[in-house]
Length: 63
Image 1: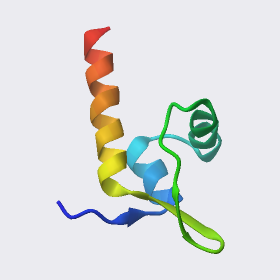
Image 2: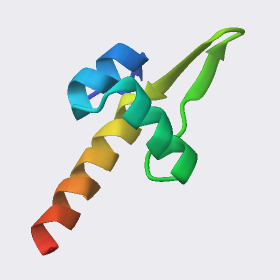
Image 3: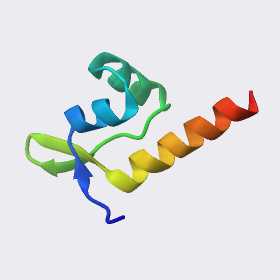
């Protein structure tokens, strides 16, 4: 899979998180912060989001 930049709506769709939950988790350090991709634009590297999903799934399995 090639790494690409995901914008917030796509991150919300992939993770199932709402906008407010996503930013609350970022503030707590529970979700990776986005990278600045322009003066007024941010996005997440797909690789980082996939890694987060994998880690979250593994931690649910061990509980």
